[in-house]
Amino acid sequence: MRESLLQAQCGEPDLAPRHEPGAKLSHVIVVHVHVQVKPDSIADFRKATVANASESLKEAGVARFDVIQQADDPAAFLLVEVYRTSQAVAAHKETEHYKTWRDVVADMMAVPRSSVKFTNIFPADDGW
Image (cartoon, rainbow, N blue to C red; front, side, top):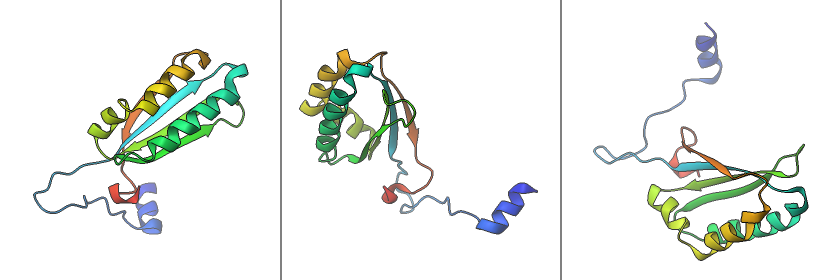
């Protein structure tokens, strides 16, 4: 009942793949990196991470690279990285700016960072 009501109010979303017939369907790769830094390292972590994000956006395979700080815990960060292909994820980890960031922030972390990979449902690939 609720699903029918929602569809009636919002319309059925167009979830059909946007590609040529016979073409391989691809999705962007969305990576959420969770980082908890030491309280005395917040400013330095922000500076290093914004520098890395700025350089990452210059990579052809990177669609987005967001640096987000938790409102109620300033030592908690979320990096939202959107890559056009799995090859772009691997290529990013070979860049000098990533390697510099990784090494510079290693001692700033209160616990090891963790990440989760997602694929997009909406918006479509060209919406990123």
